[in-house]
Image: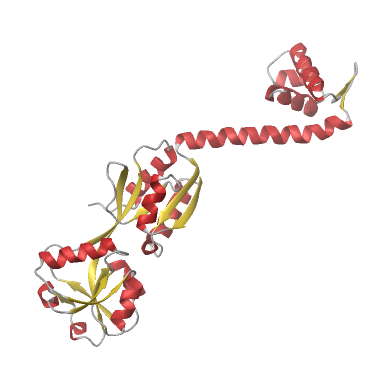
Length: 298
């Protein structure tokens, strides 16, 4: 089978239509150049170049082969560049899982940032709940996950890339709605719309811990998985709720949001996770940019 060197020699002769100029272009002498062309023609079983003492011209087969040879060389060069970009962390395809909560603000910001700083990286985005992302990370079906902790710290590396303060959402006709803030003790025995213990384990456990540490015993009257559903139930007058501040934009018009006055605010965090043992320089570049440009300072 012919080699890439045969193609490069043929293209140079075909474009120059002169063995001397083609040899100079390739930094070689004419005899080995002529041998390269002869070997190529022997491999193909056709004549590509008509030679005479005064002229060099392509045969009909040579003209057709020139187009294909140039395309092959172009693809080889592109493959070389692509491999180099991946090795240096500046190219390739990254599959990123994300939970719905980050789709409104964080994900568009992150995608735009990566697009500007790593223009040769193609992102494939997949909406997945946290449990599915963890499974997909371990089976290498995704390269990165934007999810809720906890994860196996021995298996994965993590980076907190968003931190939202939890705020109180009440119906607009609730007695609290006229205030700017409430203290945690005022939530005792308050009817609450709560995150579901299985489907929304992260926020459920976060708030259960907050209520316990604050010696609060709210009455959980409904459970839901997503913030927009919880806010809709709040607007229906079913109960109050604690939701991440970023979710405020999803609230109905009949829902009011207040701050909780406390010494240590409760925060909801979004975590970027990836396998500890993974040889993918572009993953490292993605995480470096996210850490520098997106992650909160503390």
